Length: 125
Image (cartoon, rainbow, N blue to C red):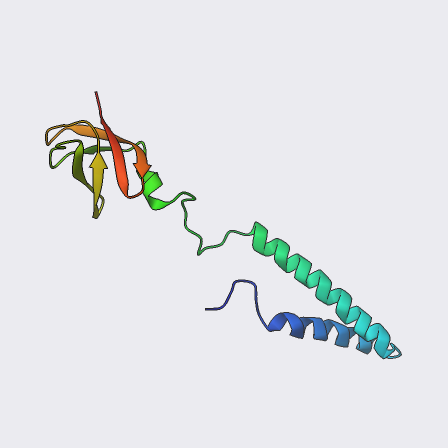
């Protein structure tokens, strides 16, 4: 998988700019050419790093928090009762273990926290 911002065309463009300098000023010494290439390389790396940090990455996940943390604050209806402070709840396309006060099926509960892979819930009044 290619990393964003990495390409072999960067080096080619720097060589092209140095070639343009030689074309414009044919009496440039090889030391000046090497110096120009070094300056262009450092500048382009700096600009590239700045662009990578400031431009949005399309592969980065939209949410900054772990998936299970995104459920905190959401309200769900119990399909199964909570018995002995434990139960299960259907969230989107998955089933999660839950802990909270005993409730009957059909009760609305709010996710108030996460403990590992267990969602902590409270009955909604």
